[in-house]
Amino acid sequence: MRDWRRYVRERLGELGLSPEREADVIEEIAQDLEARFADLLGQGLTERQALDEIDCAEGDWSPLAAAIRETKGDSLGRRFDRADPPRAPSPSLAVLVDGLWQDLQSARRHLAARPWTNALAVLLLAVGVGAAAVAFIAVRAVLFPQLPFDSANRVVVLHHRGVASGREMNFPGLIGPVDFYRLRELPQVFARVEGWSRTRAILSSPVRSEAALVEYITDGMFGFLGAKAQSGRTFSAEEFKPGSVDVVVIGTGFARRHFDGKPPVGKSIEIDGRRHQIVGVMPPGFQVPNRLIAEAWLPIRHTADQQAGRQGLPIAALAELRPGLSLQQAKSELEPFSAGLNEQFGMGPFQELQLVATPILDLLTGDARSTLWMLSAAVALVLLVAAINVAAILLAQLTARRREIALRAALGAARGRLLRQLFIEALTLYVPAGMGALAVAWGLLRWLQSAVPALLPSAPLATAAIPGLQEARIDPATLAFLGVVGVCIAGLVFVSRSSARSR
Amino acid sequence: MVQELKKGTAELLVLSLIEERARHGYEIAKLIGSSTDGELNFHAASLYPLLYRLEQRKWIRGRWVEKAGQRRRRYYELTAAGRKALADQRSGWRAFVKAMNRIVGESHA
Image (cartoon, rainbow over all chains, first blue to last red; front, side, top):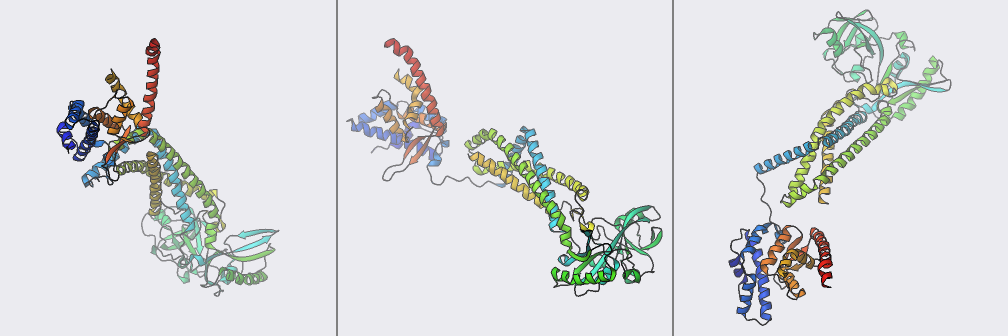
């Protein structure tokens, strides 16, 4: 039997193809000639005649060889031959780095090619993500307020609720001295009761005078807040007694402004013209839980007469429920207690007057929660609109680039490589957008911190409208949030691009 | 004369023959020969360069197929691009034939 492969190989000569492709070409043409040969024999020709016929018909083989070389048969159809296409060897590190560099350059070129569209995409993302980050900060501040108490869920604010001329009124946090001191006599309800009273005063140091907020506090207040002086000390029990030496604890801000870095402890300042000795300086950021930050703290000194009546400095009272006691139990204990006080001291202009305990977490988050939900919903909408716009912009670009991608695929770029390039492009868009988002978040947070207390109705106890917002900073958790949003958006863009690519 | 025309229409012939189903090279050559009563003949030397060229253009796709008890053979099928090219060439051919008939056909009628 004639060896048609050898016949073809001898006539075609060197093809310069890969061994597999060359074998395929030779096999295919050999099969063709073998079939022709069989047909000719079937028509009654002898082997010699049939072979001559084929030799004559095919004539010169060199144009065929040249045509095969020209079409570089290697790129043709080979992949259909095997169940498992040959795998490319895994790239070395240098190849990988080079590839990444190429992808970055390519991404840079594409960004530069459409500067305005890409700038718009970056701007939309920056605003959307930046606003989302601020909403995240605010929601976190409200849902997890940073309170100084060990057991914040047992801390209640004690205040009066009264009805006068048919209208119900709340007196946020302010109760008379007698109410306060009697509450301290309820150990079956409260583990501790502390309070403060705020006033504005003229504080004068040798350097200058300023009008500042000062807070009178009860003897256990610093301990309740877990606060210690940064330098010096807080008040001794003796210093809460009327007639003892006037002492004051100041804040770091005041110390910095008035003592120029020199230790103020032991020096004196005048408060409303009265000399007070500085015994301690509180650490930065210390404040009793409310919106306004005081510059100095003084011991509350109620005389025995004041303690037995409703005259004298009113107090904003904070109490810690006795462990194991529910809020409902505390309220039912408070009712007869309050009625007893009313009987003794009257209700003034009120038809009803009742001491009420409200959990501090409710007060701090109550008003802000609904505001925050609205804010979050608005911001989520902004983020969504931004993401949709960006996706639309990028998809429009992609349509324009489909030819390029198809060409790269045709030239043999692996799918993984193309996907990596698209992913890097998405990232290069996100990195400037992320930086922009940080700037937007910073600016928005600053604006919110200055504007929100004024924008929102005052919460009871004059707490910050969004508690914790004043102290909120762009912290690692916020950066992590930005990172997660970034990866999600980059992933979204990447998926939409690659799915558009595969369509 | 016939051979001259063959060069310009070879692509159209091959594309038309694999429009309905995939065929191997010799089958295509044989079909062309039998359908034209031997007026047109494609030898290996002219058929395969043409097939490889069309494949490189992605108009057709070659695939080795193994059938039980037979040797594997390379079958060619039309791609989407090939289908479009075939439609274009076909309408071009019809326009050409129509134009030619108006001059050549009518003068001999």
